[in-house]
Length: 328
Ligand code: UDP
Ligand code: MG
Image 1: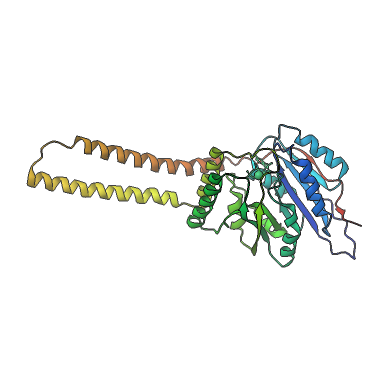
Image 2: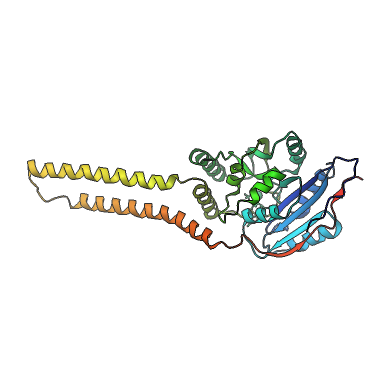
């Protein structure tokens, strides 16, 4: 699997690996490839582009094979089915060998033009260089608001600092990639994992474009699950909330009980109170179910982790023919 780079004694070229997770991206691949290679051709490095085909059901794989036939820098990692972007990125990270590794979306929402700047920061010694959105166009106000709210809440409740307004577009140093390789949890909230590893990190600001073509693979239920994944992977605060809420309610009920005892003692009991009884019962029932649900979210994830299944299965790995150095 390893093919060593064809460095000569005179050049200081490094191996730059690009990871592109793709899932049904036939509409954008050509333009993406054109823009990416346009940028890469100006970089003094040995380049290796790995497309991770995440179970596409359209002509994506065919197109990738056509690219590969004409470009010896391209590898294709074909997963056995759709595993989701987080896993697809992980698979890519497992296979790349670069000294610097870049993860980029295929839909051109991550401008490849930022890559030289990322490399510059990496040369300055940063292990993780992430692109932070100054703005995002082509997305609904609702998506922007919910996304921004989510990242702000995450930042509040989690133990690691997950940078706000940041996607997966980033450069990772070799030691950052190696560190990530050691984190094998199934429920992968990659943005959290990137932050968890620590090391010197640097943000680059950019304006996020709209998707070039095709449709986003996200919908609101998927985003909700993504948010749950983020919260449960990086915070146990909801578990604590359940405890405090329970304690608080029980304490309230105790005070109310005292109140009723005194009321009965001093004013007698006129046997009303059926509505208030019902309210209290329903309220407590609701709180209990909610707390159970929270516990269930964590328990279900523990169940998944204990099964210890591999994160993904590979159908085919078509490695690059050779690492090619630009303009030499
Ligand atoms: N993607 C993937 N597997 C999936 C969904 C998406 O590999 O199950 C890829 C997709 O092809 C694209 C990137 O992940 O390159 C981002 O996907 P998308 O544009 O749908 O996400 P958004 O930009 O809306 O967050
Ligand atoms: Mg996108």
